[in-house]
Length: 128
Image (cartoon, one colour):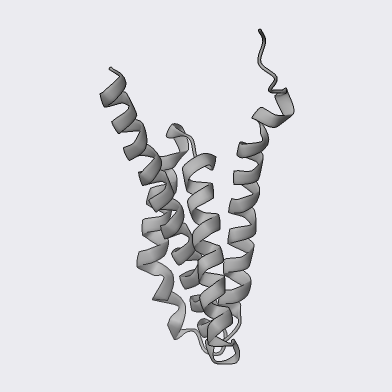
């Protein structure tokens, strides 16, 4: 008996993961541009949770084996150099805020990629 899955239901997860990555990047940049003193601490906490959820979904599903190494290198570079723009007068704080929040999101995406690889490794070990 053939499967009842349709082509559209199979391709939902990659599309959802791609949108999770895009929405997470936009949310990270927008929240990073707003000074932290003007955001309610409870709202900051929930935005962090949302970025973590979006990042884990995007990292676990969106990145394939060919792209994951380049993305991890990008995330490491962003984490190292995010504070380099702090010396720019007036705009430096905004740029650092946006890059730092984006670096947090990318870090969670990297954790999603790592979890996917570890799960894949365990599945391969026990199946083979």
